[in-house]
Amino acid sequence: MPEQVLAAVRTGPSKTEIRTFPMPEISEDSALMKMEVAGICGTDVKLYAHPPYSAPVIMGHENIGVIAKAGREFTRRKGFKEGDLVFVEHYVPCFKCEWCHKGEYRHCEATDWRANPDGIRYGYTSAEKAPHLWGGFAQYVYLPWNAVVHHVPKGVTPELAGLVTPMANGIEWSLFDGGVGYNSTVLIQGPGQQGLSQTVICKQAGASLIIVTGTSKDHARMEVAKALGADYVIDVNKEDPLARILEITGGKGVDVVLDCTAGAGTIPILLGVEAMKRKGGTMVVQGELAEFPNFPLGKVTVKFITIHSARGHSYRACELALAQLASKRFPLEKVTTHTFGLNEVDLAIRSVGNAGVKDVIHASLMPWKGI
Image (cartoon, helix red, strand yellow):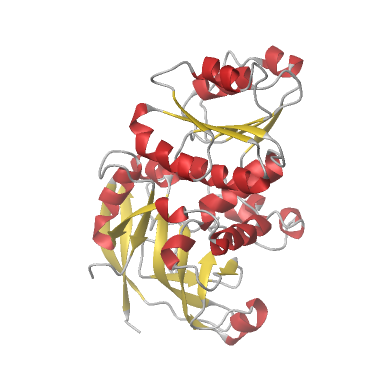
């Protein structure tokens, strides 16, 4: 095993440097993971362009790798041994607080990088915090005793397993939060990797109608959405989305609206409210809006709309996502479109943000590629 680890470090807004870090010592209750694939999503695009703080960070929070070295207690407690292919969630919770005891460790303050300067979360934590390897844009990642680890099923490649985070989000948001099920009618706004994952999960759950909206630049993604089960796709730059949705649904509107535009503004929210059926629909929203001074609360209450905020994923959602990937029921290889090496991090992130290589949906960063 090498003495030094190569990593791509975000050093400022849209700036990356390749740096070396010492190989950490592994205690009895910790482990070291050799990275295979780090997925790149829309959150990475935002954090790369607008870092929340100035400290250097090894990004990468959708991490698949092989257990390279594991302490005896780590193996005994967690059931993972050297050589296992695993998925590591980005949360590193305390396992002592109320949220952790509920199994909702995604809300644990120990993972809250926004409010807790000592919080640890893969892809978000400062590389200055020992033992430094807190992100997947590196050749190795450190796993403490409280890392949340899942076995990758046999037959699932590391590249395909890189989709588990958006797939888990799809399960959490559409099934658990949105209540999508048999005969549901669903509007999915945004055909990125999150929206495409929602498409698969809604189809698997038995939705009778799935409508996906996007812009003209999303043409290739819309074609993938159709291949994954969308019944209709709407280019909002070419036609009135509300009129088209009402036409498709015979004027009734949809049961569930899933906003996967990553905080693209108020327009998707307003469209979702208008596209909702007359009474009792559900809307799941994600992303951050600075303000919404004219929020149509009256229409929301008259329509008896339930609004949920999307917030990460649970352990159960990850397990179900891995099972979905292993089922091979959907052509999900159409989502894993491009691979990049460690020295191509800048290009990879920009490409996911539609500012580099064209038609990238889910980018797989392979830290050993080209080394």
